[in-house]
Length: 468
Ligand code: FAD
Ligand code: 2HG
Ligand code: ZN
Image (cartoon, rainbow, N blue to C red; front, top):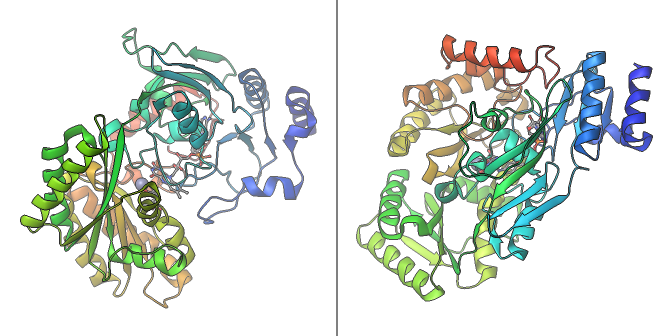
């Protein structure tokens, strides 16, 4: 393997082929600290041509490639296995914004650009790039595209797939496919772009993308409503959609325990109510007219929701600082749950209309089987996507609890399946759910996926052991 590593050094420069244990370590453990793998090296190219050169070497030496962006993925997709035979291909040096076209309303960016940098560059050009999630300060657009990330604005703007008009990809053979035309209409055969989006690095390496930009809203208003049940949240959603239409840009459900964990582990973050309630909804309006228009709309919505009895209290942020404080409650849930200890995540979706029933039935089934387990349920209610995460009973042992992961997954995922849902709504499959998904997909679906994988990556060097 020395020959291989020396050729990699020739291709990207010796300083960008990391092999020392301390240098490689940060790339080997996933964000949740559930697994630490091993790698031959971490290779950090700085251009599509350098990526292509490394992929050609990997193909020649049959070295598996694990693409990695910000390493914030939730399903063990971005870290290598324990064999020590792969390289981690870090895309973080491909971080140029290649251009912004404010007439076409597009931005061309390299895969290693951090999401927040893209949002800021769009804002500087007077535009909005709406993809937004709690990891935006460190996740990369290449990772967002490869997982088809969702986040908190899907309700209005769609998943990452809907925000992408074109891709540049290095194929498993080391060729560069440039599909960066930025067209809104192009029906010239199979849609290769959509094949690579959501492929989690198993079909090729995304090196650049053309992203859609939107007008900046004139006003943004955030409110936190307190409620009794998830069914009440669904009633609130219907009222909000009827009154606000496309102005409603976020609708996030959080159960009491989520905010309890946030305020416990981040005491500087406060709940804006004098008492606790069973459920909360964080909602945001992005108005294209004016602050006054948005305020009137939000006040009317809250009044009707109070009258109809689907909310019991609400606060509206009257400044950017207050809005950030409300969003902080939502965006610290994952970190608070991690600080509390190990947990079992379920990133599920069911038809929006069935969410209340799903939560009721699944909660009972889980409590029967694992008395005292804590359901830390939150998520993107407006998209039918819940993070139905389970933590051990208070003062229970993490290790003991994690041993039941398989059985807990069975209860939750079988319930999801009965409700016609998906066991991975927005995080992907990675290594964590690769085997699990086979229980719920038909043989035909799996066979079609295999056919694609084998046709595009016949040597099986792209992120092996993930997805399929
Ligand atoms: P990585 O974790 O590095 O990689 C993810 C996958 O993409 C891996 O399979 C990797 O091999 C592949 N990959 C990465 N870059 C490339 C590339 N250039 N070419 C080919 N393959 C590549 N996800 C959501 O959908 N919605 C959320 O609201 C959300 N919130 C989050 C909040 C927190 C606090 C955290 C830690 C994570 C959250 N995530 C969320 C999960 C995560 O999927 C996203 O953070 C993000 O999309 C991953 O980007 P990344 O650059 O970190 O990718
Ligand atoms: C979110 O919506 C993310 O905040 C993370 O998708 C969810 O921690 C989780 O389970
Ligand atoms: Zn989410």
